[in-house]
Length: 86
Image 1 (cartoon, helix red, strand yellow):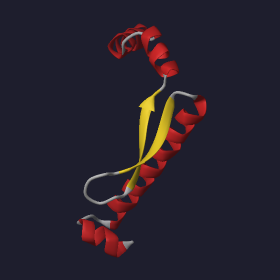
Image 2 (tube, rainbow, N blue to C red):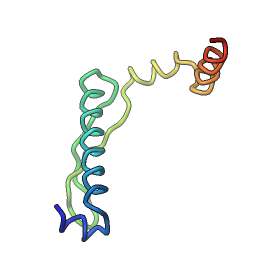
Image 3 (cartoon, rainbow, N blue to C red):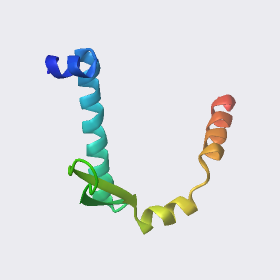
């Protein structure tokens, strides 16, 4: 691991942090797939190196839910107002 970090120009701790972040993201995406919010398709790149990757996109459930949710700025404003009251 130390050699890989050095090749990438990172410290070992930064490299391990990147690994942890990628694993958390993968875990979160798997959960979103399980709950039906996101769908996934495994694809192979057509140009350059022919490596495989996963493409993710929102499902209709996520889009419908998004329409029913208030915008994030309104939620943040409401939270700030609640905090100011107490």
